[in-house]
Length: 332
Ligand SMILES: O=C(O)[C@H](O)COP(=O)(O)O
Image (tube, rainbow, N blue to C red; front, side, top):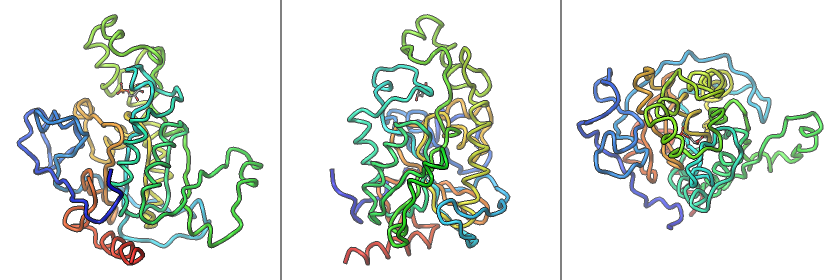
């Protein structure tokens, strides 16, 4: 596997005439994060965007809190990068078990997926990372950041108690500048799958019927037995995104969120204003980074960079191109 270099080409898939995209797209030329099979029949499921760019939801800029790591009053900025990434394959994904909030690690394949994801976003700035409180998301974030060309050190912020906060303080401004805060939030956890957790997905379908299991897995408001529906998951994940993450973007901080299939589906549903019908077809593959640009209160989908290049990722993002040149300069 090649290291992250500036030679990567960006795969920008032209939006083919979607044969089975979910729901008619209200904004012509719009694209979605879909499983490739639903918009590019016959191709591998990549979680790839059949992509151009388009502007999605308008988010009212929120009041700017001081940034979590410095406490300084952040400057307003007109543009920031938002990277979303579902964790790499976990040991229970491999066993095809419902996982939900059970805290299982990555498989070796999932580790490699996280590393590959890191190479794909290695030229895109990241100032703060949000993960769930589950190890598979945290492992993915750390492994991805190991590939970043800026070589900053991701440090998990501990605020679970006053002592934890005190004992994890960093007492060097220079070292702080060379680190990236990683904020863990249970609100970004995978949806809680209730009494399905630990069950084999195929056996569950054999027992309850394929349609019933698909409804539990992909519908918006129908929860699994004693579990969370996507709607219930969205209530915590999207609220957290609005209250904690959008202010960071508004202040110009570049954000990466490493989370889960369903907590991210709920966030993308919000960003793309998907209906409860459209979200049924939204599938996210493990370890595929997805890039949005937050610009003047709007989110612009920029696809799933296979490797950043001026032609693709930076077409609408001058500041990212400047950042990339700065990185190139640092490598001279
Ligand atoms: O929690 C799980 O089982 C997976 O991470 C996501 O499961 P799903 O694709 O069935 O929602």
